[in-house]
Image (cartoon, rainbow, N blue to C red; front, top):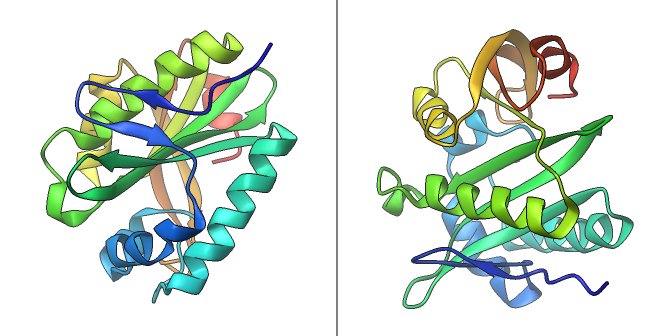
Length: 184
């Protein structure tokens, strides 16, 4: 079975990141506040960091361990990213970010909804976990709109925070203890 690594939502095309996206990705995420809300984002963030992430995303996709996509808009180009990685058992962890210029406009929700549908269509994946730092309630609103339920709190790592901090954990079609035990 041949897999398609592109999918659409009403407004966006999600596709694997490419080297030519590096400068635009770096412009989107070179933000201290954004780095604080993501696990693996360094700050400052340069085009060379984006190239490293693109190479990592290609390798992980080829290994079947993680699927990362850029969210693209026909006129604006890259405006965010969405993806998921295998945590443990049947659970996959979903993550996303959107450029500050488009935050609050449903970009993350729309792209993540399309990702969940793609994951089910391509892999039969229906069990997901997610999390957000307690001081980032906007991410929790995205997860709630997607049908995730908050199941508890856990300390999670953030490179931008320089360590671990309190985060809410969410589950979709999973028992609470599985969601709390997933990598995060």
